Amino acid sequence: MSKIEEKKYKFDEKIVVLRNGHIDDAEELLEVIKKLDYETPFLLREPGELTLTIEQEKMFLQSKLESEVNLFILAEVDGKIIGTCAVNGNARRRLRHSANLGIAILKDYCGKGIGRRFMETSIKWAKENGISRITLQVDANNFRAINLYLKLGFEIEGTLKKDKLLSDGTFIDSYTMALLL
Image (cartoon, rainbow, N blue to C red):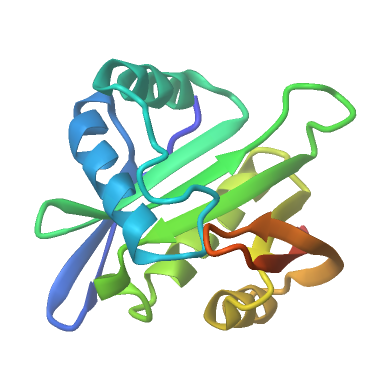
């Protein structure tokens, strides 16, 4: 099963807990994801597009816990979910060495080292599970995230021109980045 040991660390006199997502998190997690959709333009959804039910979210979380190739972890502060990190692998033999990573953190907690902790935990998990390539996509204007990924050894492999069409009619380019382990 794709799990990590719970980890704790401090920032600003607060304790951050990184742990596996569980089915009991479904309702709170949906609320956090909806809030994230309104807080950041860097996700794949427009605000209001999320239509998952609590039952569907429970099934998603259970599938991640049972998966041999996927990891889904949460960050909590004061017992409240403040971010998510997913590593999505592949069971196909030709792609088993590769996984895609995505992170989302509530605005009030950005810049506190949580993204770095998510990344370091995910990279360690990937190494322990035979993954030798982690990929991600990032908006070309998400400078804070790009800087973090570069510091951790990711390289830009390409640019996806006009990758996202925003609700205001403007386009955003994205970078495809990878880390070879």
